[in-house]
Length: 158
Image (cartoon, rainbow, N blue to C red; front, side):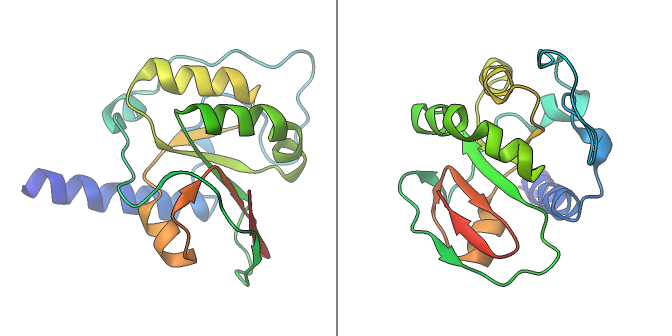
């Protein structure tokens, strides 16, 4: 029980750092802020040691489903998108990855069971940064319960 509480605390700190833009080194693929990717997208690298420890990632309050678009006021929030290892998320990611790239959005993989699932999402993302982390706290803070979703400082949309 204590180990679970410590892991949940660690995951919350990780999410806060990710959203604050403090973890540029925790992604294994993709250009950094302001950088352009030249040539074909990189293939997903193997998992970082901390990523393997994070799996499986389960966001208990989130599931695949429709999200109603709405305005929010979260100044300074970096654009992030939430996806999982499911067919709806994979389709959404395929259709919107160019837009996510233009926004320099960071991908949070909020439900994924295996390294293979994370690798497949990274392959589909074609160089976008994807980090496995629970999305429960962000979803509670911003009031949504489904993904895939894009969150910016001014809106939430699917």
